[in-house]
Image 1 (cartoon, rainbow, N blue to C red):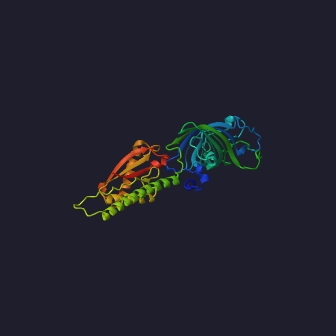
Image 2 (spheres, rainbow, N blue to C red; image 1 turned 120 degrees about the horizontal axis):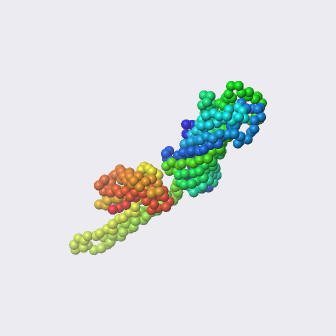
Image 3 (spheres, rainbow, N blue to C red; image 1 turned 135 degrees about the vertical axis):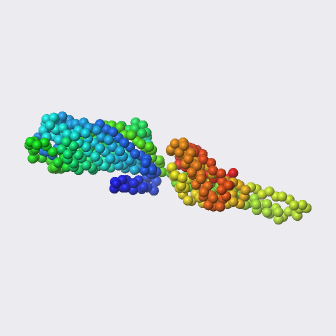
Length: 384
């Protein structure tokens, strides 16, 4: 749980300088970027009890090797940091002699492991990258079913993945595992050596090397969105405000001209009707975060006030059109989301004093009208 909270904390961090933009992505929801994997495992075992017996040390000796399997489930909190829970085991060796028939056991090694995707950390996230280099470290528990023994376990490893499709990858996993020295004990009558054939760097431990091959399946949303270009969004807002101000200035100038004509013209013999130029306003956009119907920035609502005032003081009505980006979510989900976004903006207009009967809501569903894709997560208010 502590590792999970640490991962969430790192996921919330963001860099502000331009040089780090290639490493920055938008934080996904908790249910995004999960994965499961299944591997066939080859293990070579070296137990503490064999020290001093001068057994052959080769990784492929039949009295050391055994096949097994592993399964794992995990989540990437950022493109560079992930956690997984991994269970490895079935068959192992306690290496009490060079006779393979004496050494077979059944075991299970369950660990929580922290993954570091060096490809994304050092080269930046790239959705099309084929090969990812992922070292990891883990701790957990190991159980010897034959002797009914448990112990602590640790591991260091290197995971290599090759992308086959958006949701499937081929992986090769190489690891070194250690455990307490009494997890794989010698059977009664075995004369264990008391020397140290392996040096003193990792004394009194059982250990094994593992090589695994298998497949990883990415669940749900398996990619990351680039951080939205905030400057571009602000520029779009400002251009809309400038257009609205320009139209209001034109209308004020026209009204001033007409008032001046009225003051300077002779009194008419009969009343005359003067038609004042109608005021129009540019549409105003309100933006939302991915998958959300809550306004991303309250500053967007300030731009609505001019349209709200115009609707209140005239017979004009407003149309609120909601959108979602078509690259995220299903068509039915985007249709519902666009309607929710439109209704959110409608509620804000009502709070500004616009009669509900003057507001029409339209749900446009998922679109890709504007680039980048984040600009399509919006609701647009226009004069009807």
